[in-house]
Image (cartoon, rainbow, N blue to C red; front, side, top):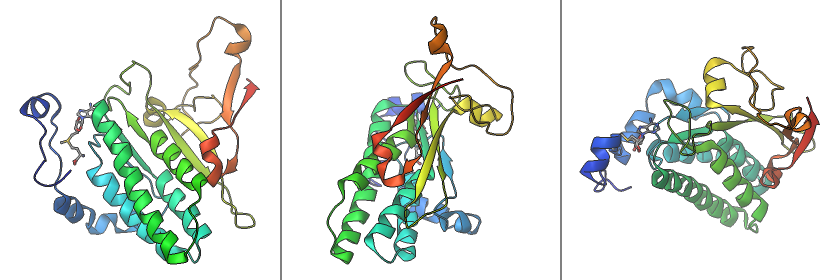
Length: 238
Ligand SMILES: C[S@@+](CC[C@H](N)C(=O)[O-])C[C@H]1O[C@@H](n2cnc3c(N)ncnc32)[C@H](O)[C@@H]1O
């Protein structure tokens, strides 16, 4: 959103406090010394609980992609580093239209930098990279109420933790684990019940009348980061 359009309507300002931050203010705020280290790390995570159309998150992504550029010596390296940067940025936005724009703006920033890198290395576009980027952005930018932890359907807001495994033969693999926002706040278990954020009490998040279904959880398979778009899950008995 341009500096000239920081407000969409008085009604939205009144009802949702929707006033967007001008880009120059975003840049000034992100230039704060305290943020230097985190913005110069591909993996340091940020969560913006009132993300709007992504004024802060898109600028953070730009900076992390610049870092990915400096850290990479070929297109494969950039693709991997750029996806790692994406996994570190999370947002919550209450309004559905803003959330759609948030996803779109994050993707645009990613795609523009990717195009720049493709031309730098004279390399062909890899559709898997773009599909995985969109999968990560959609998983990390959640529609919902940051105060209640629920989305528009009344379901829990769910975020994915992207656990990066040691790189083997140049391939970065990732284990994706889902947590509700509530579990993240309280240190509760993952959605599949197999992992703890910080060793809090176990909660059953699965409700079903079928006993087998009650005892079955679906976990994401560990895959190369570039393949996360496949969203392959395996079922496991609890
Ligand atoms: C002041 S605007 C800031 C947007 C963005 N951070 C920026 O600086 O441009 C606040 C945003 O928070 C959203 N919002 C309001 N209440 C919320 C809630 N309980 N949970 C999540 N988002 C909320 C509004 O829809 C609005 O987009």
